[in-house]
Image (cartoon, rainbow, N blue to C red; front, side):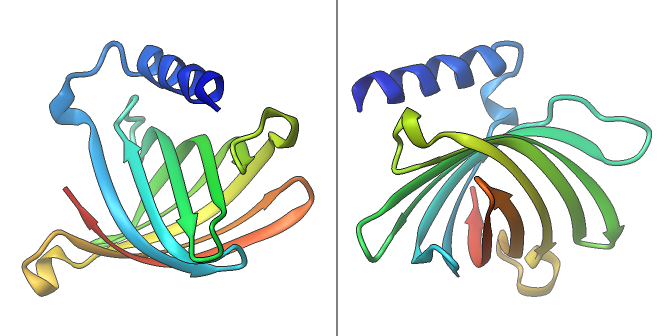
Length: 146
């Protein structure tokens, strides 16, 4: 377990080596979906910005009420669809239970609506639909972006 977390921290750290801390955007969300209900912590930052949209590496760690851990590291392309609404796709690896023996390729499509303009707080509403190891992974989330 320590080895896996160490590798993740080093890989994520190397990926963020050229970014400052203020570009790192953590969030905490309540999630529910095919993997159960629970909490998800996520960190992402902007890697680069093409003419439209943005590319972001993201690290997601989730814990559900059944006591299961899940993780994912992926690169996401987010595209602005409307004011406050972004849609995107991501490709990376999923780590169910944080065991390297279960690590698999992960493809995900997601949408996120920023509720800050509506509610005056840095809240968001999002949804993910992905495939990891041939299994469907879908979830809805409501979260707070720090």
